[in-house]
Length: 319
Image (cartoon, rainbow, N blue to C red):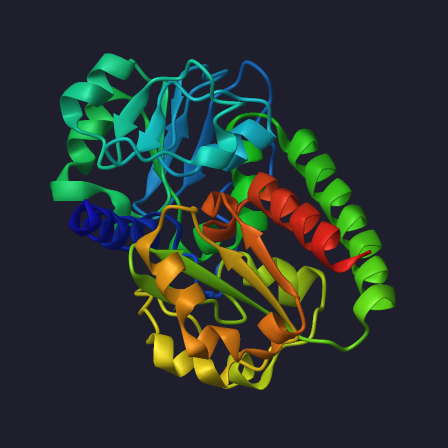
């Protein structure tokens, strides 16, 4: 069972890198992929994506957008099917995705045909598996995000809004998020001042320390401006391949507060808590460890995931 968890964990990391380019996707200097003119209801939209020109159908209803379901749900759209790796899904979205069938992460052709999509959306060219781009185009119009647009969750949401004729909804959601973040930032600053925090993800028996620009760290250090401990400051910028950190190396983690993202049953969690290294951490000694039993919103970038993460951070730090 432990081997299975380790294998699934490694697979999830690899596939998430393919789908979301969650680290610091480099900006290629180009504008977003969708034309400046908004899509009008009942009108097709011609756009340029990572592969060339695409005609997005008017009023598409059945959307397949693997690992981009956060943006769909934020805009009030349920996908025709939801991303999965075996039984693994985006846990934090399951209330919104109730009744939505799963589809393999690599969108097998037969499953894709069975989903009967009006529009297929991929997070990047690398997310299209086995050179099957032309096959998908025969099933439904297929839009592929440019890497830089996909890596920036705000751009991702804006483009999704344009593709689906929901520009205003996207703009309103972003404005609401920014207002919420501003308020939360002020509360946290008043509560902890310049104290530092860090995020550690445990899966299987491996440990992943968030750099300052990966997934939920963008909320913690970016939107909420919580101070970074020296160890985080000294980490290199996040890369697509996320490497685990040795338990022994965590001895240098000098954070005042520690967010521990891990399902309770992970083997590495018990090992961590029993170690002298963990017991010697500043955050542990100070009683400032906050366990997040559902790590799914912490290990993805999206409006809904970020709002959940923000709520958890505020609840932990503001007393």
